[in-house]
Image (cartoon, rainbow, N blue to C red; front, side):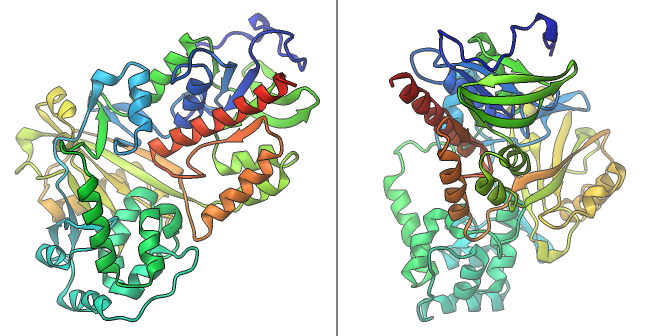
Length: 497
């Protein structure tokens, strides 16, 4: 993407424009920052542009952790590959930027656990691995006889006291035993947060289960009741839980970028923000790009950046928020995407893939059979078979430093044992996300509340992204809408005085 030379740009001054819509600078060009720009510029709702929007992205690429690429000449996602469709925000944004006809749900959702020496079907009747149907769980063979016997004790145990928050692992282990945590909850949470069940907040990560926990009674009965209520309110025509985009989810941020640019927004890749300071008229940012450093004025600012970057930029103006953001931990991971020739496969793997409980001690934590899961990929590469594995969780960084060929070899060794995959790929790509996912420990929501309270003192400053109310794409977009609405309201209030 070309950047306008500094000499050809309109002057970036610290004087507020005498007329026209206010100027809002969005720092961060991932999906949250681009979504905030879309809301501010009228692309994703509203009657028209509400601000002159500038998006600053430190890297040369927009999209953040949504990224497409090619492996063996086939377009694939090298980051997130699907978006939750039961929350509307991501699907609505995709439609708003012209991708309505490109949405496509998975063609199979039959996942398994690779545990206790075999691939075992994922049980029905659970919420993020927390079971509500012991009979369905027993049929899968995921738990040992001892593990099942311990889970049944939940029905007779005295109440478990849970306060405002608790770790998912602690609550589940107290009610139904450690084996349920290790073989069910851990692999599912690992797929979403790349974290550890004993550290992840129930209130922040799976809030629908908090009332069940706070009731103090049986976990099994509480989850079963939750599932029954969900079934009673489900639409008559089943809706897909997830949606993909033909060609990859990585198309979404690029389409949003094109749409906001067409609406008049100024998108500047390769532009890092060095500092952020309050002025009598708004905000002054010191930015650096290929042409050097300059000052940029704004009436309002949206920070859509990882916690460490936000902490640095807020250190002077919102030190309490900066201190809280400085405590946020991240989990790193690597994705190993491989392309095989179908003619060389001993047999096509079945289903959408499998999860691996960490307790089983494997190198990989999951594998997705991409060509099975996505019809558009199956159609575009009928002679090939693409799959990917993931490696790494919070605090487990040693594997991420291994050479690419070693990560590929370890993935192949596990795949050989799990599904009998004995052939070599004709192409492979390793993508590392060293600070991929923020962690949500017990008390995370209270931390977010304190951060937002400190930032709200400024009115024309807002935050959004995966750090706050959810790591999924819809949650990030929802936080972007909230940020856009907050700064718009603050600017409107100033304009009416």
